[in-house]
Structure formats: structure tokens, C-alpha cells
Length: 353
Image (cartoon, rainbow, N blue to C red; front, side, top):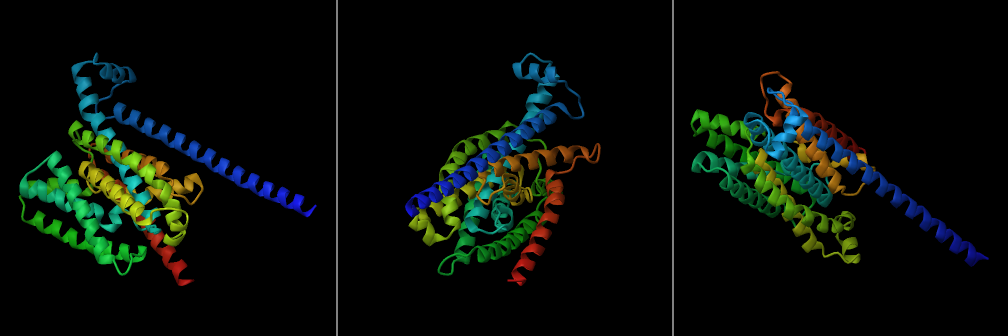
């Protein structure tokens, strides 16, 4: 009788766990579909709206190559590259932030707070202002700067291991130093060049072309599958190295792979759109709240990043009428209050033990 009751209890517990997992999966799918729909809707608005009005028919004919030359140019060469850069860079920022925050187990651990994007920015600005490079050269420079900064931060934060808190503090310090380097380079440059670099440093999608889109597409084709494969190790790593090893996870190998993928995502996004503030920082927490569970939620984080960056760019183009703001201004307005709230909440929780 007791054995029968025990089996019934075990079966009931298994059914409850299965039901919870099924509910979580259903909610995740719903969130992903909803966010995908929002991204597509924003893309449609980005292609249709602007100083020159075009219709859905005009856009369709432009894609088929049968529209008026002026309309085709506006849709295919001006609006489409800008919109796609916003979606792809936003997704890369969101995915990078989700990986860093889950891996380090710290809500402040995003590439913009850690200084990764600033490292990419220093190298890119040096390429733009000192060398006079553009296109692929800027992308390669941003990659080198991001990986070099990540290695420096990890080296400085190492004390028989790396804690998330120490990594964040070191990253903030390194970011401040690199910001000073950027300021010095800009003061030694021509005024016109410095103004252009300042817009890029704020984060802007203006004047984006297919040259900016193609490297992002190629990068995401490689990095997104790699991130999703490596994401299987994220949840065990959140419970600590010993637990992860007990579950058969190669801790150091998985952590290294995740860091390399996250840094590369941030570097490519920064090279394409500039160091747009707070997109990587906000995307993962928002995604986790939408999904309703504490896991990495990487795909929703990428989609939230795309929504935030493209939506902010649409606002930046229209909030002041004829004056177009850099998209980083809008994301800064959105992200700064969240950062203050997070710091205040974290301090209160820490002080209360």
C-alpha cells in the first residue's frame, strides 16, 4: 500500500513538472511569435514612413525591381539598409547582453557596462580618424578592440578566479580609461571629422548602406547558431562551477566559447551602429520578464534588442520633426532610468542582506 502511494506521488510530481515545462515552453513560443510580429511591423513602418511617402504597392514594386527609379532608390538603398542594420545590430546587442548577464550572474554585466563596446569604439575611432579607414577596416578594428579589451578586463579581474562583481567594477574602470583615449583622439582631429565621430560614438543608424548590413548578416549566420548551441551550458553554469561539472558540463571550455561569441556579437553590432547605449543592458531582463522564468531566454533577448533599437530609431527620426537625433540619444533616455532603478534596488537588497 505504501509502495503504491509512493509511486502515485512520484507520478503526480512528474506530471506537475511536465505541466510546468509545457506551460513555460508555450509561453516562450507565444512571446517569440509576438516579438517577431512587432519586429516585422516596425520594419514595415521603417520602409513606408519618412519625408517621402510611399505606399505598400510602391514598396512591393521596388522589391520586384519594377518601381519608379526614385522610389526604388529610397526604399532599397536608403530605408532598407538602415532598418536591417537596426534589426540585426539590435539582435546582436540583445543576444550579447543575455549571454554576459547569464554567464556572470550579474544584471550589470552587459557589453556596454563592462567596457567591451567602448573597446570596440576606441579601435574603430582610431581607424576612422587616425588611419582614415572605413567599411571592412572599421569592422576588423572594432573586433580587435573588443577582444583586446575583453582579455584585459578578464586579466585585471582575475584573483584565483573571476567573480561577477569584480568583473563589473574592473570593466567600468577600463571603460572610463578608454573613454579618455577617445576624447584625446577627438581633440587632436579636425572639427568636421570629430563631429562625425561623435555622432558615431553616440550610436546612429543614419546613412547606413549595404556595406554595413553584409558583415552583420555573415556574423549572425555564424554566431547565432554557435550561441544557441553553447546556451545549453548556461543554465548549469548559473548554479556554479561545481554543479555544472557534476552535470557533465565542460566549464572552462563552455565559458570561453560563450565569452568569445558574446564579445564578437557586441563588436560586430558596434562596428555597424556605434556603441548604442543600454540596448544590450535592457534586452535580457525585459525578455526574462516576458517569458516569465529565470533562464537565459536568449532568443527573446535578441528580439527585444531588435525591437528596442529599430523602434528607438523610428522615434529618433520623428520626435523633433525635421531634426533627426542619433538613435543612442533615445536608447539613453530609455535605459538611464532603468539603470538607476537597478542600482538603487541592488543596493537596497545588499544592505538588507
